[in-house]
Image (tube, rainbow, N blue to C red; front, side, top):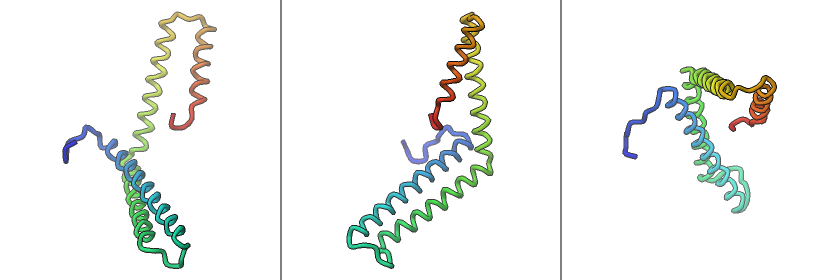
Length: 131
């Protein structure tokens, strides 16, 4: 990828991407902090004044969390969450329409149609968040 290449993203997608990237960086900084604390503890224990390596990653963690909060706040203010909910609702309606069209094309009996819809409902209810 070249420097400053254009990406085909909407403003909402760009804000969501920024939130996700900021979250990833905050988690990475926290991991570095945990590793620095573990190294310090392994080198003779915890003192009242943490070494520079721990302090550096503590500060970085704080900075990354502040950036994450700002990115999330900007996204919320811009209506990204509402747009995502609307998009998911539209996608759900499109899937429901497609399933209905498929069932209509099969010319099922009422009992078969109820059984097919019941199976689809059970599968959807079994999904975990993030599936």
